[in-house]
Structure formats: C-alpha cells, structure tokens
Length: 430
Ligand SMILES: Cc1ncc(COP(=O)(O)O)c(C=O)c1O
Image 1 (spheres, helix red, strand yellow):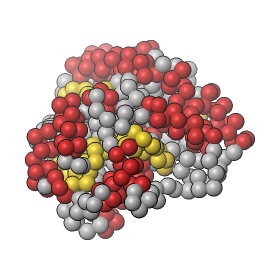
Image 2: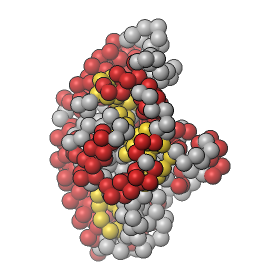
Image 3: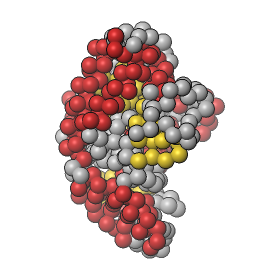
Image 4: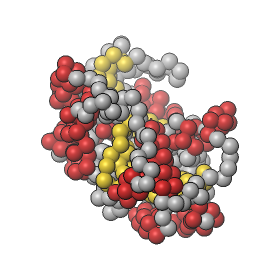
C-alpha cells in the first residue's frame, strides 16, 4: 500500500485526487487516504465497485437520456419497483430529482399542495429544527437551522421574513429538541397554521450524528397525524442503509408522510435523489386540480437509475445493512475508547450504525474539529466536520457500508495519531 502522506496539506490548497478504489482515495503524489467519511456520507459501497461500474458502462452504451414526459425507461421502472419494496410503509409513490436539496424542495411543494388541495391554504408554516441542514436551494435553505449556512447576503433569496418558517431549538447545551420543545413551538404557532414539520431523524452536518430520541420521534408522528400536519423526514444522509436499517426512521418504528433521500442511493457514482410520498398525500393532490409539476430535466434519467439499481443490488447481495450494524458497533466502541484516551479534546461519541461522530468538549476552541480533520488528512484519513456551536461541534466518522472490521481498526489507528497530534502528545503515550 502507498504510504500515508507525511507533510501537512495546506488548509486552503486541497490535494488533487487522482483515483480511488474501495475505501481508499489516492492523490496525484501517490499518497493514500482512507475515506473515513465515505465522501460526504454518500460513497456508501466504496469507490470503483466493479458491479456498479459494469452497470453504468452497460447503460452508457444503451440509453443515457429520455425525458420522462416522452418515454418511460426500464432502469427507472425497475428502480421505482425496488424503492417501493423498501420504502416506509405509508409510501404510495416516489418522485425523482438530482440532489438532496431538490428532494426537499419537492417535499415542501407536496406538503403545501396537500394542504391547499384539502382546503387548508392557511396552513403555511413549516417547523424545522436548529440544528439542521436541509440543502442549499432556496426552499431547503429557508428551513435549514444552520446559521453558518445562512449568510445574510442570501436572505433575499429566502423570501421576506413572514413568520412562516419556525426553528425549534433545544435547550442550550443539548443537541436535539425534545418533544416538550416541539410541543411548545407548535402551540406557539397554532397547529391549524402548520403545513409541515421537517426533521432529520439522525442529524448530520449540523448536529454531528445526533439522533432524535425515540419518544420524541413517536410523539412527532402522533401529533402531526392528529393535527393534519405533514411529517417530512429528511434522510438524505441517513437513508439507504447508513444506520444498519434502510431508514433511520425504522429505529423508532415510525413511517413519515414524506421521506427524502439522496447521496447513498447512487453511492456517489452519479446524481439522483428520491422523495417518497405517502398515499394520503398523493390521493389529496390528484383531486380536484390534478398533479402539480415536480420534476427536473434529468429526473429519473436511465443512467442515474441504472447506477442506483446496481448500488441497491450491492447493498442487498453483500448484506450491507447487517454489516453496517455490526461494523458500526465496533466503530462505536472504538470511538468511545478514543474519547477516554483524549478526554481534554473529546466529550463523547454518538450515532447509529456507520453514521457516527466524535463530539468536541465545549471548552475547546471552536476550530478544534477543523484541526482534527486537518491532522487526520496528514495521517491519511478523510473525515468531515459537523456542528453549529459548542454543543454540536464534532467530527463525522462514517466509512463505507462494506467496511470490514480490519478497516475499522486501520481507521482507528490513523484517527488515534491525528488526535494525539492535536492533543500535543504521542499516540503511544496518550
Ligand atoms: C440531511 C441533508 N439534507 C439535505 C442535504 C442536501 O443534499 P445535496 O447536497 O445533495 O443537495 C444534505 C447534504 O449534506 C443533508 O445532509
């Protein structure tokens, strides 16, 4: 194996990636990097998987584009059938787009249309959480609870502040809101004005793999159903097996009205995102005005759908849900050990399956997670920063779903060296 880099990559000049295979990325100088964050939690079956490459190459030679208003195509038909088989129980149909942001835009349009069509146009408020991240397009950004993503200069894009986007915040020092905090926000707005509640069942870039507790998830499901509010689960990051089950919602045994996902559906081989829509919503929207416009030029294109079919086959054939649960267990133990070894830097670890994070102690400087990421890079390990403040500052650790137990050990070794460097001690003496 090519040795890990020994010199610090510049903070601003990133290494040039030359090629990648399995869980490793190689730069133009021949250094190897273990992909400890699966890209940005999307390269779920690793790089250069032969079965995915084969499927994409075959599709390239056969048919790469037809528009969904002109033709149906086999890869999309097959993918829809397969997605419906693994979808949350409420799902009646799936809508395709190109990115997680677009999948969330689609979810918002559907939620508003649903309320409008059933005679509730006054339901215009959307409740979401801070911390949260839902994407960079205008609608998705308007419900995102990450102040660092909402630069004041882009506020005009998000519409006049009209009180119809409400962020629910946990108590200071906590990572996720409890059902009491959701209840207070809901009462404050008045449930009859609320169109949708959007949640990340397992937080990602904003909270650092912090889950909503099961009681709160179940409370949200019950209250939204009782009050005619659409429950949207954003599983762009946590979906498609990342947590050891198809959906993070499955860990709380709830099915949302709309579930959005992206990233892992094509494993980073091409762009595709999915919005799963419940029968209650499709039924209301079909009548009396007919369906609303949702798609994009490249929605459900045959090439992306062929890649997604191949990735789903890899997940199923290689047993990657149970592998993510098993290796995720070892990763959790490893991260807990590292927290014990570097108590000054780290408070705890969180997450489910192979979507995990190391949390930085609140008394550490705000850029500590960035320093750990930089030190990891020097030690041949790629990770992602997460968090929007003291309670959530963290480092996401999320290797591909086909990671072996040995790979987790190798990741731990590289991470240990990085943490020792940031803590200012030798890893062996830590
Ligand atoms: C939970 C969540 N929602 C939405 C998005 C936006 O997805 P995309 O970058 O594909 O637009 C992301 C991306 O990281 C995400 O993690």
